[in-house]
Length: 99
Image (cartoon, rainbow, N blue to C red; front, side, top):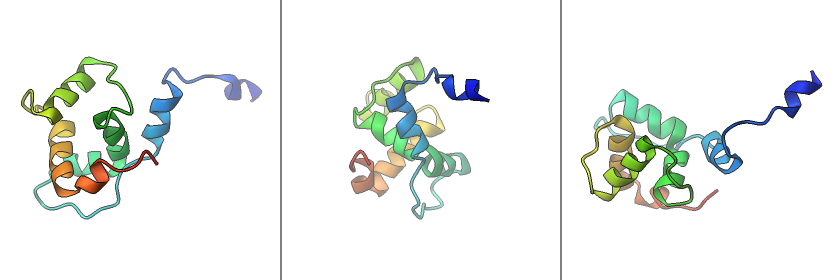
């Protein structure tokens, strides 16, 4: 059993810390699809960290997410569309503190 405690995650600790914070407990409108609601409720704080530059994109999907939320490209998935809606509906949460 001791061995399991010595295994290190392949995800950098900073990214993991934001991921485990979860999402936001807010009332979302019916403009959000079920998938978009799931994103905001479960990984919203990770997306906030990414969108605010607290985390750097590490793959093509995250790079596209950053371009989409800046308006450089069209949003093509529910992560991007959810965050665009959320930052309009809840700008204070979208740009909030790192906690």
